[in-house]
Image (tube, rainbow, N blue to C red; front, side, top):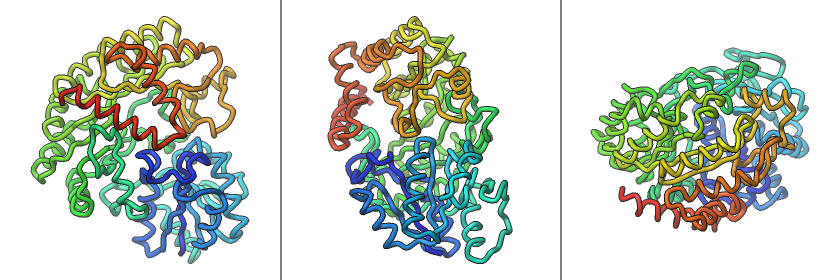
Length: 474
């Protein structure tokens, strides 16, 4: 079958932004995975990327030229309204094209989404195994292996990660994708992205699926890994093909499996890799596994992105984070000791946070002195426990899904929050390493006010991260 996969980017604001920055050029991992599975089953796959066209007219022209029998859409919560509009446009161009929707939001909202007349099928959960089977059903009427929850909704088949083909990075102009590294002054190009595990066992109330939502919403809480040998095989393939110089791992919590990480460090060096890489992890795991940070640093770990979230133990407890401010500070010291750049994520504006809690978080950041600070304002995301609380108490100020494309500290999200106070706190935190208010204000402008100026943002990010790298001495 002729299949077109659609990359929604950051919605309508993304027209003609591909190739201008990391965030506007990053390949959609899920679409690349679907493409690889569909091609392995003998189907023809094309891409329609909103970032690579100028306007809706060119977008519709691309769909018309590709003349797909099937269009695959991957939906985040922020995409719900936009993709409904895209599906309607597809049906006007070709009413016979089957529109299939997957992605994290389907696992949360499939009961509502199935009422959209322009969606033919929805896949809740992992899609790589189910998508080719659904294509077979559409072409030959063979329903075998498909778990229908309703006429339109199919439960995705959980996959063994080692059984999957390498994702199809060539779905995109990949040479352009790798030219834009994340943290460009620290991680050199070409940079690739990788995911070696799925799922997260933690129950943070602002992120994890709530009891009311499907556990398939975010791959669930059961953690599974690709084998280290499989990861090494893919990295060797990518080294030969793209000669990459850095990696960003998008695993939710890279350091949770001790034996896996130890094997990874050993085999990464044994296979001749010296490329620097970035990971995401938690403060408590850093504290409990200092030896893993030491081994990862020796292997090439350059950046650890850590969700510290708050400097108030009361707020951390209310978020279900299950870490303490003491662990936050200890984790920062461990990263400093092992010469790993500390990217500290903080979140202000949760419904249980007082002004005193905000002040504690500002002091906490200044005491921690992370290399890079990222500050977001809490945004209620459907399917989480905290969203349920916000909805029950009528606190949301989010007007539509289109308001969810950014969590940056630049607009109001829930009632009862003094956002002017939070903006001032954000500025102080963004200058926490060198407490000069003007530098904090510049960082705030870069972080919150340059979203639509992607080339300028990319350049300023390069300057800032290059400065951080030189100051860190790592």
